[in-house]
Image (cartoon, rainbow, N blue to C red):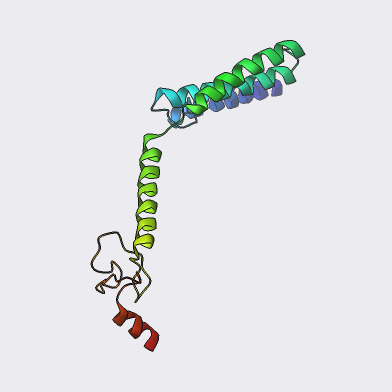
Length: 155
């Protein structure tokens, strides 16, 4: 009798363990990674996954040395080709904007558009400092208003 009660309790526990995720509406995600919104990202992920799987197959003894080297060379070439294509348009736009800003700052330095009052580098063609509002009177020395330099030295 005790065995029968133990068996029924064990079967009930297993049944509850199996049915519990359904009753609580909890489920396991099908894919835990980020969703790939473009084909290039999906291809890069597949190429890198194939290399990882190849290493696993070698470690478990499914591949001999010659097959491993051949497949590794082929998959590595494919992965590098896919990674070489990895160009996110948002990153490229941000990079171009940053390069443009750096070029403007360099030209401002060459043109002498540094404010004598606060030292802020202004954009080419600026007539007033973008930080303190002082009028920029670019002279031959290239360092802004002499009055502002005199006020700064007086402090």
